[in-house]
View: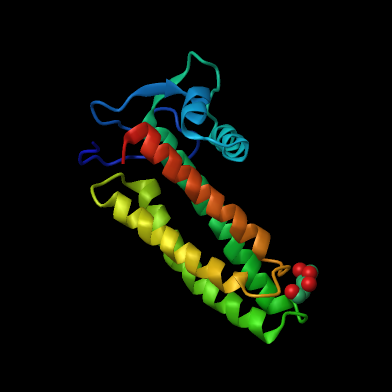
Length: 181
Ligand SMILES: *[C@@H]1O[C@H](CO)[C@@H](O)[C@H](O)[C@H]1NC(C)=O
């Protein structure tokens, strides 16, 4: 179980960025992705996150499981920022958006602000209550997703939000498989 720890993150890369609780296993990046990710899609995403975070994927390079979860959360935050920006740009520049789409995008901006705050919390501090914070983040993102599920589904934001959901799913998989939370 995760005890009270505060993680000081290096600005880039994750080497020495995390402090693991006693009992959290250390493993290399490939094994972390292999153990946690059931589907090819998640597995590929996981490897992508590792490479993004500068993880040395050689089998000899072991990190604590917490570091991988943190990394996945940081990756999701960056991705959500990009989605938020895309939504803003669509609202300000795309005159073809329907009224319904505009409403959905406005709602999504709020949902994303909330989701970002929660997941950023997960990325910064693996404190008790982090599971609740994560759940709040998922709920906020799902709220946006539901807005976009209404037709037309071809709306420009659809794919971005779909991908962000997978990024949160990856955090969840790493969380539950590596940390048991
Ligand atoms: C603008 O919005 C319309 C309607 O959703 C969409 O079909 C189109 O691809 C958007 N244009 C750009 C440049 O994203």
